[in-house]
Image (cartoon, rainbow, N blue to C red; front, side, top):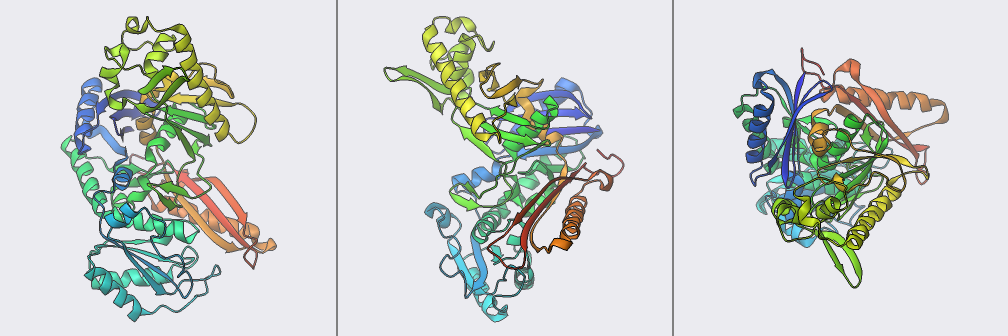
Amino acid sequence: MLRLGIDVGGTNTDAVLIDGDRVLGAVKASTTADVTGGIVTALRDLREATGFDPAAVHAVMIGTTHFINALVEGERLAPTAAIRFGLPATRALPPLVAWPERLVAAIGGHSYLCHGGHEYDGSPIADFDEGEFREVLDRAVAAGATSFALSSVFSPVNAEFETRAAQIIAEQLPGAPVSLSHEIGRMGLLGRENATVVNAALRGLADQVATGLTRTVADAGISAPVFLSQNDGTLMDVDYARRYPVATFASGPTNSMRGAAFLSKLPSCAVVDIGGTTSDVGILQNGFPREASTDVQVAGVQTNFRMPDVLSIGIGGGSHVVHGASGIAVGPASVGYRLGREALVFGGTRLTATDIAVAGGRAEVGDPSLVAHLDKAVVDAALREIDDRLAEVVDRMRASAEPVPVVAVGGGSILVPDNLEGASRVVRPDHFAVANAIGAAIAQVGGEVDRVYSVVPQARDTVLDEARQEAVERAVAAGARPGSVEIVDIEEVPLAYLPGNATRIRVKAVGELSLGGHDA
């Protein structure tokens, strides 16, 4: 089964062709402002390198930073109405509270409160007031809102109010994009609501990007279905991506980590992914990135949807190296995509971390004679600084005092020493520079349940079985082949502050992609 994996990064667009467990070819192309230009170039180069027949490709998997970049930049966001059902409670912290002012302005600042919401056990806080909601909807439309984010207190337990409100919007404003918090975030009202508002603001852009990606792949003569990679390392089809663009935010580091697991055959390890500007460090558990256990800030907005637990530091292949009276400093400033012309080994004038790696004998890149003049004491000091900071991040991320294997991937992973403190060993697999695209290509389909249950001691097994079955059904509904789905993670958290033996249960299931007669 031929799969194309494409990862669109800020600097490079990587593409790989995989047949089963074999990597048939890999290329890098420069990312373009319109995203699709880099993909076109990468596909052309990959076809020249491998001679693959576009008609023989069964699936195309794409990872992109397009949507999170739009949020960070505060551009191309739709005017969005954030409508919450929670009165008479929740008035003290209205929607969009604590958002950066520039982002509030970018989406229009439309924030509304309605009566409703539920307690943790599903009983209503207040009845749904249809007249009140219709009045709020009219005000939002008059203010210019074109996309709608609906949230309700404890909607993951009872989504009745969000669903009823969505039906009214569909009747009154046919075709208007609506995002529902119980479909996007987890427990925790503000984080779930914020994720929903962000998703709603990106719906228009998601439609444009999904259309552009599909057209680009078709123009290359490929008729296979197109999928986008999600934050948790699983896939979603293009239509799902149009509805949930927020699910792609962390696909870059997630793809790299999944690719590292595939290439190294190590399902549990630390992954150090080094690009031109930063190093991203995460932990793999059973082949999937460990997920963040707390709310994650995205562009200054607190959110609680699925995100990998990744720690980033400002060290990359293009990091500036400065030495003076106060010692050696590596990063966070970087030449980024200009590395190929500004680093000393490429005939430039800027001393970078790549130059240090070449001078120290860790890598053979460019012209080593151009860094032969560097003071050995400076080189050694810079290498120690890099090693110490990487070791510190790995140490902060590992769950126990035991050394862990470290898999180094990304174009800048030449900076990682063969012996890193805290690592049982350092692994540099083949094709390490395009691990991100490989991670996209081998991604599976997932389903997740995250809900508060009332669990009496005698019924615990029954409740867990129910949650497992629902997670499996969600994976199959998302496109997984039924017989291939397995449970990869179960989490139980008793909620002592709630009555009735309340327990939060989260179950994640994954399976191989089903493509009719060409199942993975």
